[in-house]
Length: 248
Ligand code: PTJ
Image (cartoon, rainbow, N blue to C red):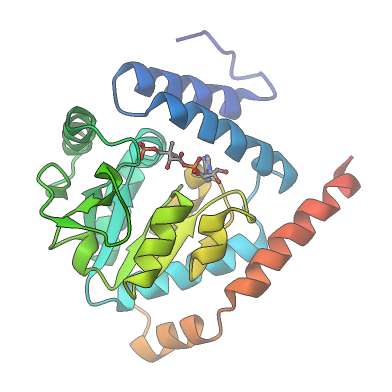
């Protein structure tokens, strides 16, 4: 890894990049994942590289939805595993969600590597390597999933997702939660809850929220969900981007 001094003003961003590059070499993230990350970084600049109010509200509604779900599943792709593997496992534990490795650029070998990597981080049970169902309406290997996992989930968290698959999951009647720094992406617009935040901030926030909200009464959690308006959240994110000029 390149030696980056912690005093560098872009330290966090630079070590995150280094981490992703290393994960590409380890066969966990895909090469296309680097491009996806670059796009995310650009939007992160525009929202001030912080968790804004609109993201905090979405994170809260997302955690409430996972806690109230019958069968919540967290879908993990290469970038998500590389950047937030440990914290995603913790979120699964705190919300009672199953974890499923589900890839856009799917190869059996990469699913295996990500699964082994998550197990090395402490995951007890990971779905992914032996898919036995398909998401209807999608061709190719990206449709593959587990019957007991994503296929039968009522609520699914799909961070950094491809627009097509997010829409296909919606068509299956699932509640779709995404984390996407681009509020204009097809995924961001298709989802029921869009967290416009960097996954490296969003997941730790959601773990803290889950620990706190686990003790909240179901009716209170339901109120959080009922008062949530994703259209408004996406507009607020775009307004924040419009205010980037004020931060000059
Ligand atoms: O590991 P695989 O094969 O499943 O592939 C994963 C990627 C991410 C490469 C694949 O799903 C893909 O190509 O995704 P897209 O269509 O590029 O969409 C990714 C979205 O995530 C984009 O809108 C980015 O702005 C956003 N994004 C990128 N990095 C982050 C992010 N959002 C939150 N946090 C990030 N760190």
